[in-house]
Length: 122
Image (cartoon, rainbow, N blue to C red; front, side):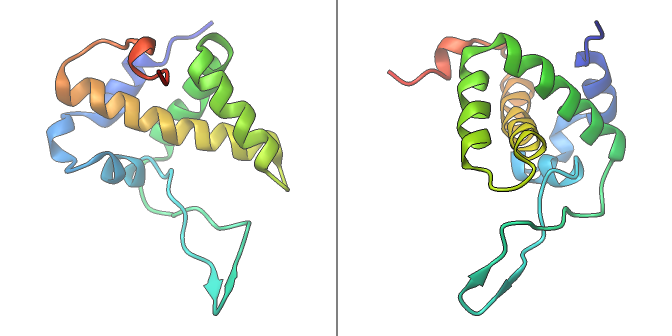
C-alpha cells in the first residue's frame, strides 16, 4: 500500500503561500463552481478547472485510505454517502478529501501531528 504524505507535501510546497485552507482546496481542485438560477441550486456542480491535478489525485487517494482507518472520517464519509442522490461513493469520497484538506492545512500551519481525539465531538 502506498502512503501519500510525501506526495502531498511535495505538491503543496511551502504552506505559507496559501492564505487559508480554502485557497489550498482551490489549488487542489477540490472546490466547485456555482450552478444556480433563481431559487434553483443544482445538486451536480462542475468542479473548478484550475489547480493541480496531481494534488487532487493524492488527496482523493489519501481520503480513500483514511476513511477506512479513522472513525471520524469514516462517519463523515458515511453521512455524505447517505446524503448523496447521485454518484454516492464518488461524491462522498471527494467531500471527504475536501475535509482532509482542512486537516492537512491545519497540521502544516500549526506544526502539529494528527490527533483524531481533537476532531471527535465531545
